[in-house]
Image (cartoon, helix red, strand yellow):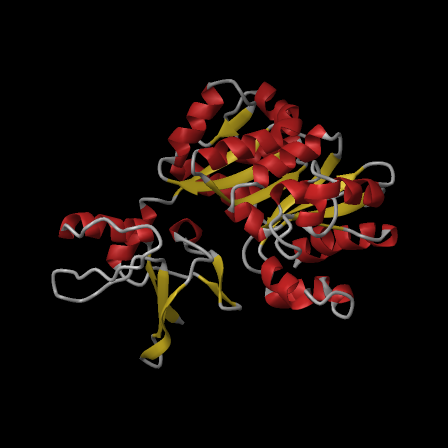
Length: 356
C-alpha cells in the first residue's frame, strides 16, 4: 500500500488567505511560502509514498484527473495509467477533513419516476452530491419488506416488481439535501431518513443479485468517465429518455484496465486511438445503459452522432457527442457499432461484469 498525498486548490486557497499571500494573476503559477518558509504550489498536485518500503513512489507532480470529491474509502482512481483503490485514510487529520464531506445517503427512484431518472441525477449533480453506486433493479415485495418492515403496504407496492433505481450518494449533508428535494414533490423518490439507515439500506440494495437486463432488441451505451466528471451524466440520460429510448438496465461500473482492454479489443487493430480509449474507459466510473427499441443499434448510434465531436458539431449538432464530447476519445458516449454486437456488449456488462 502507499500513502497518496493530495494538494487541492481549495485547501491551498484557504492557506493563502491565512498567510496573506497576494492574489494570483490568471495564467501565472506562483509558489507561495508558508510560515515555515516552505513553498507550496497552487495547482492540484499529488505525491505517493510506499509505506512498506518507506520510500517515495511518486514525487509531487501536477495532476488534475481527479479531485477531493473523487476520494473516499472504496473509490478507484487512475494515477498515470495505474488504477488504485482507496482502502483507508492515511492519518486522523485527513479522516476528519474528508469524512465530513462524505455523508452517505440512499435514494430510490420509484418506478413512477422512471422517465425522470436523468432529471433527478442532474438535480443531485447541481447540488454537489456525487453518485458512487447506481443500479436499476426489479424486486419482489417480500424482499422489500425485509429492509422496510414498518413501511405501509402502499409504499412497498409503489416500488415492487418494476424498474427501481437505487443510488448511493455522498456529499456534505447529503441526507438533508436529498430529503429537501424529495419534500419539494418535484420528484417521486425515497430518501434514507439518516446516514445510519442509509448504510444498512445501501448494503441491502447493492448486494450481489442475479443479472438484470432484457437481452433482445438492445444496444449498449456507456456514459464515459470524463462526462461524469464534467457533470453531464444527468443531461445525457435526460436526452436519451426525451428521444423516446427505453432504458432497461442501468449501472455504474468502474472498470479495471484489463476489463476495458478486453471490452474494446475489437478496436485494437482498427483505430489508432485504441490505447487512449482504454485509458479513458478505466479512468473513473462509467454509466452503462441497456437501450431498447426497434433497430436499437442503428437508431442509438445515429442519436450519438459521429465519433469525432467536431465533425458532429457540423453535420449533427444535436447529437450527444456533438453536445457533450471533446475529442474522438473523450466523446461523451460509447455506443455499439454493429447490429450483431448489441446483445453481446450488453451481456458483457449486465451478465459477465455484474456477476463477477
